[in-house]
Image (cartoon, rainbow, N blue to C red; front, side, top):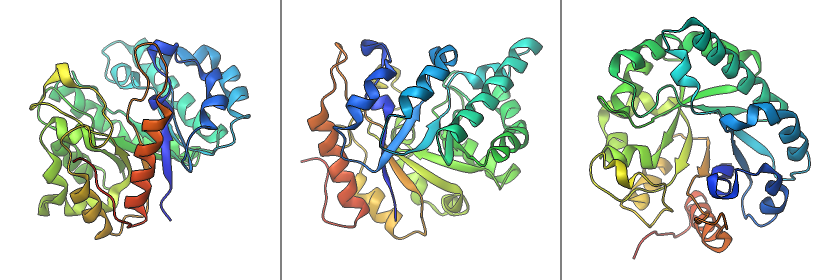
Length: 279
């Protein structure tokens, strides 16, 4: 049965200092099956304290979202930066195992890397997958937005070169490039078995409109979730879903009512009950 997870990124951000000591209090207010832990670059030096806090969290942590900036170092021309990035990646793999996470979401590129750098990153996937496999963690590459080409093209390229690599499909990332319907196309059919995780969030804006690149709650944007979940039901998808919609305000206060409403609606979709986002 599919699990409904909530990303800790919906709860912790710069306004509340990414304070992981809040997690034991916050998780008690969530109506979900588990968590996806968003690991921040400021947490490496606090990893022992973080691990201690997570031991008091009752919800299982099924997925680790690896620190997002590792990809920059992996393709750096500086040998020291590259080695540090590989070290950080290995750390994320070990940390995932230590908290019981079976999957790891990874940004193989960022939104500003050029095509040459992304192609370089793609060549590193066998080594990265081996690191994750050694910890019994499933590495999944996310369809991150990009400055050149588009995420769907890169997923196709990865699958052609490394068919054993799994993917996390993020609805906002696809919508940002107006690629929502790519998932339903014949060209996507070979990729579908490789999609092992979904991030559910929304986008409201134009094509690659960076100033509107905010992670919205489903129903607050333009993604057709009725179509998405209807399509998923027709596939052999057996993975889980993570709600990844920012739920804290500028003061760091979390709107648990809205977040739980979103979680409830996603759960209805998963259970194939009547559900709908939007008016």
